[in-house]
Amino acid sequence: MKIFTLIIPALFFLTSFQVSILDKVRANYDTFLSDKALCQKTISELEKAKDNSVTHLGYLGGLQTIRANHVFSPISKLNTFNKGKNNIEQAIKKDPNNAELRFIRLSVQKNAPFFLGYKSNIKEDTELIKKNRSQIKSDILKNNIEALLRD
Image (cartoon, rainbow, N blue to C red; front, side, top):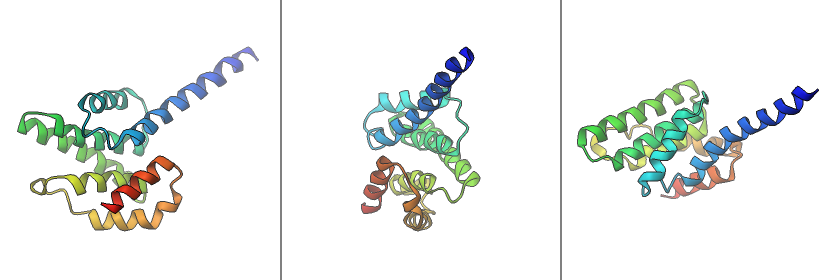
């Protein structure tokens, strides 16, 4: 019986820790572009977390594309952006109907410079998000989506 009193709180802590990372990313998503330190710190947290969810991978990719804005060298900018883009695409390939992943890609594509050639899914992602937004439970994510769709 004692073992259960130790395991249950530990499982709760680990589960809430993973959720809190994603909640932190959702809550600060607009801030990462202007806050280099927060962006890098959160990428490190996402990389260290052992979460194999597609949402985790999608946000890691999203933050990596944002981090490209904070990198000085043009080659490093492009490599950082492409690494993030690949993670977003990999996540969407695993779960193509996930509105949160489509939000991440849409936010990147709407803000990516034209010369990067990463703008081909804007209409498709917008439609999928509008169709499936009723399934989204996070109020923070709902607000982020509404703000993105207004732009």
